[in-house]
Length: 256
Image 1: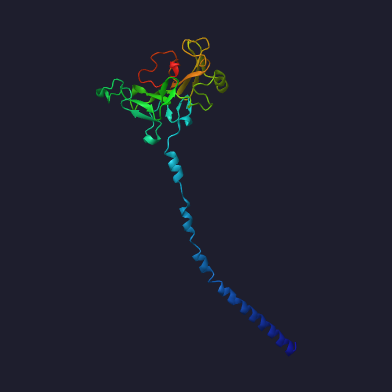
Image 2: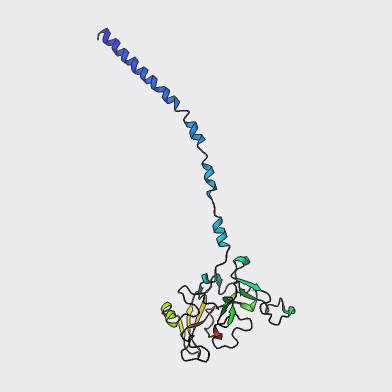
């Protein structure tokens, strides 16, 4: 190799080193770029997006009367064989009235378990010739803490999941429940269609066609009474019973 060629190689090598050396400062400049990324960490400020308040307010309201579903085991949150749920009055579907059955207005009777009673926590509405609150609740011993032993629907707004309510026709009833647990036809006023649940029993009374002494012509062949009881209790008809459920009854179905 000549001296000129050797010096050219050396020159090229020096030039490459110089070029590489000229590139290295860019690598050192990248170090400060990590500091801006640390300043871009105000991500925690996104935490305030947690707003579960609407669900809390929604759960604080009691269901509307028309939203209550009746089944063999209960009406809405009221279940056969259990006490009335202890919840704030604003959310309660039924409330205890210590003077509900004090028909005589005798103050001395207030506090007597037989004088108080559970009442639906809904405004009164007119059904036929009477005014009712939607349903009636009766507990064992008629005391505040007793288990529920019967429930009576008194408003056509309360229906089953299959849309059967007071006033439904026999055809609608049979379409909704083609295979009831029992059908009792021995009562002179109504036929009973009985549906059993887990612990409760629902009896649906339909006005008979051959009886016009209790029913008007437009009531015959329609649902007149819906009531619930423990499954261990024999099904019975309330229609035609002049005493009904007693002086404290708010159930008009069997009145006609």
